[in-house]
View 1 (cartoon, one colour):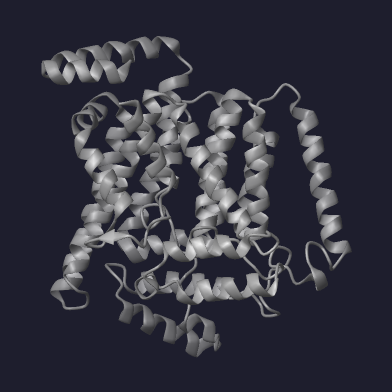
View 2: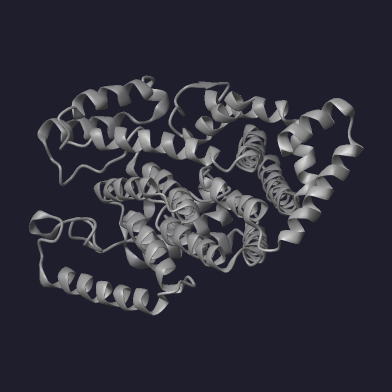
Amino acid sequence: MRLVYILIAILLALDNVFINFKVSGISYDRLLEILLFFYFFKFYLIEIQMNPFFKKWNILLLLFALVQLLINFKLAISGKIEFDVIYTDFIKCFSFLVFSFLFILIAKKNIKYINVIIFTHLLICVFSLLQHPISPIASQMHDIKKGLYSNIEASGASGALDTEEAYISGGFENRFRLSGPFRSSISFSYFAITSFILTLYMYLRSKRKVYLYYLGLLFIASILSQTRSLLLAEICLVFGFLFFAPFKNHGLYKLIIFCFAVLSLALLFATKDFLSNGGNSRITSVSSEGESDIRPWLWFTGVYAVINYPLGITKEDYTEAKMQIYRQNGKSGILHLSAHNGLINIGFHYSFVGYILFFFLIKFLLKNINLLNPEYAVFFRLVLLAYLIHSSFHNNFILNADYPFLMVLMLISVDYFHFRPNKNSFNVANNEQIWIAKKISTPTQNRFVQWAN
């Protein structure tokens, strides 16, 4: 059984890596996860009974799925979308549940299984760094990546792969954006923020320096990805935790952070060559290629579209909304780019009702975070803030296309299970497990007792 748990951890860690290998539209790793879910289905039912957090999480996922189902059904009946969108979106919502449960399954069995995920992430990070033009084997690593997207037409990654190959062969280190085995640097950034959070959490729990080494390596990879929102999220998480967490030397940490911030700003404004030749780095520049950032207009257009089509938006509706805003400001980028804000995109996938459900989701998460030890309550609040910072500049978001962050959310429940502040509640939980085990059949009971212990 231990090998099965390790397999689950590896599958969760490799999410979005083998996306090009599919059967009936489902990637091999996702299909295997679904099979493992049904293999542990009895444990899933037990988890719902004994874990209030997971039970309410299931209810929220079901509500999101039902809202999306009704909206898609309405649009399909009116002929605005294809009928296959109805069941494909519903299956995706189900896969969110599968991914969440599998992480809880292994992490509650033994929190050290998270190390398997982190080690697999480390291998991904090393692969990514070796693909950068500064690496002597960058071309060979890029050839391996092309193997992951062998079906170029189906993967839609042809242009990105050609660009990366040109930058590697030409030695354009300053223009190359690290993406590793993923389609783009943005996909890499979503992997990186989750990996950074999991690793930082394990360091805080164990204080083992090996986690710091990986955090440093991951931060270097984040810089080379030239994803500003990722760097900002990581910095806010680390320094925010040092600033707000209840440490013994709290005042000293605040002074150090303040001095670091002042020196960083002074360095940033004192030189035009910071981190790049000629000051053209994406990291230190708000604009892109000399033009002002169009994202605020993209956000405005997204909000405008959701307000005008609160019960479901089609491509045609969004195109019309874009044209209306374009006629007012003449920003041509609006016509070709999406909202670039994960929170706004909730309205595109779940209609305006999705914002209401998301409010209750955040309320639910904060309520459970407040049950943790004060140090980790601060940590998880900052985690939510860091993720919001990062996803506010890109299209992917939780319950849309970002699976890895589900592990972070489930970690709230896992932390409470292993390290709850009230030890008496732990004994009560054990008694509840025994009571539940007595209510189920003998074969299942034996498997459950073995799993719980």
